[in-house]
Image (cartoon, rainbow, N blue to C red; front, side, top):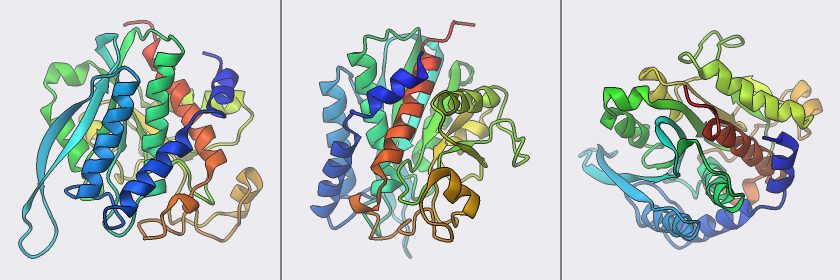
Length: 304
């Protein structure tokens, strides 16, 4: 897989059109796309339509979780799963959460990840890549409520299915307006918390993409704050991409990535202002291409 060719391809792909669609859905549904709301349902229908148009057969995996408030009523939600062909014995789960917080539309967090996944799903079909190993695109529900969708997915896997999951590639915020290119620290060399065996290789694939395109990148810890957590706890190799939230950009990061030192990577994190104007379209192209490269690398990896 030619990393430079993948980056060039994703310079012209339509991630922004998906951001615009999900922004419109939030605008039409009280300003958010939270699990259990009409905004989430309409977001799901949009994702399903895009997947079907690309030649996939999406399915919903339903679950319930306890909502907030005094009564903590049960809330119904679901994940959307869509598979390529290829061996189920070496499945790579490419996952990102579809829901937003109730406070805002969640366009960086995480319509940006959803947009990348939709374009990668279409790209695999458009490019004629025939996966040796099955890719499962997983759009999680209720991440913002407590990582419930991804946890339900992992809980439902049999012991054999867990063993047959080669990797989880997680995307959660890919277009932070003052963002960075960060990769989860699979081997724990920087943050002393390694993922299961195989996580180092995921980190290396992402770094290879950025290095071959002369793009700076750095590591970020597994801090338990996204949908990779259930996979890590189940012993499944995991990794992924993150462009930053409330941490302040350092001078070194400004020199590497541009932007403004001393300002949050995403000052609208979990706020009503997390709109399409709160995104960095160029960063989204880089991160989407990196995810595409890693997805194809695992899809085409020799069996065994």
